[in-house]
Image (cartoon, rainbow, N blue to C red; front, top):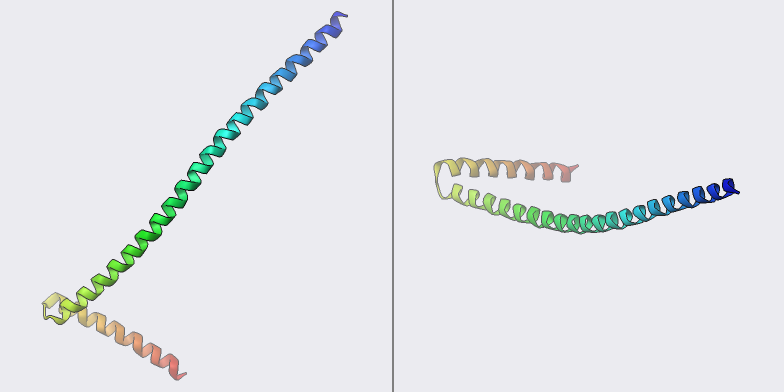
Length: 103
């Protein structure tokens, strides 16, 4: 009889241990799910901010190119060289387009 009682006690102890470990895993899963949700929202926000900043940079680059071209035509020495280089680059691009159209 004592042997049967020890076996039951051992089984109960194992069941309690497994139950405790399962509870810990469930709690850890809940915390990790919350953390994942927070990180997903943060990532989404950062992706939106990144896209907005890229758009801002592109707009500023266009404004800078227009300003450089404008200052080049106004006669300043360094700006004049930049404007001439930009005009030459645009002319080469136009020539390439014409060549493609003639094919």
